[in-house]
Length: 234
Image (tube, rainbow, N blue to C red; front, side, top):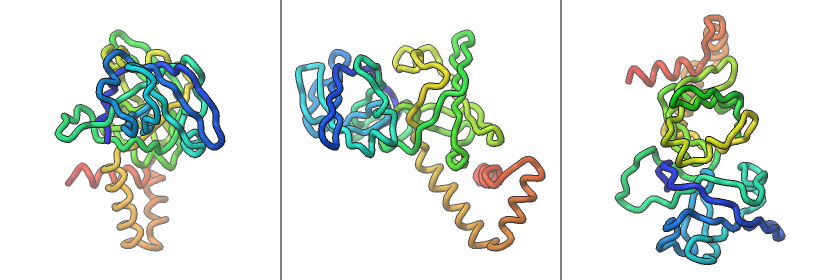
């Protein structure tokens, strides 16, 4: 498990392709690898990877399967690129962000970036099937960083996060431009609530559900708005 509090920025020292695998050699910030062992887990831009080799006090290798390369941004990375890194949380560790599994749900691209005084606003385009799990003021993990959703627009298919200077200093987000692709892990508790409510509505309303969805659409809303309203009343 990870906390979503990025502990540093690592550099991709080398990339080596093998049959069915791609090996990343990462150069970490000083002291990041202290007491790190082979078999330990490290979140690399939010992807849980296993240490397969320790090169020296600041360098380690990780093998990545083809499936992981396909469903995450790791398949697009180049040598000397930078990534967010976090070591696995220890028992009793303070959860400064929110619990993360390191299992990426989908990739999403940056639609726009607005740079305001002491704020960096990223708007991220999201496939409609995943928007149902994203709510304003809720948590979401982007490239392994636990962030709070500032705004969601379900009609246009995007959400925004606002980053403070400290977040920019400790992560790779300051390097990102419009069009960049990001790893997204939704908040699991939110997913469970949304899927449970949807299942209950389908079982309860049955054939009436399409009529309800049509009525909500006429009012400029959808089922996700109804689920959010029900969650807030609890």
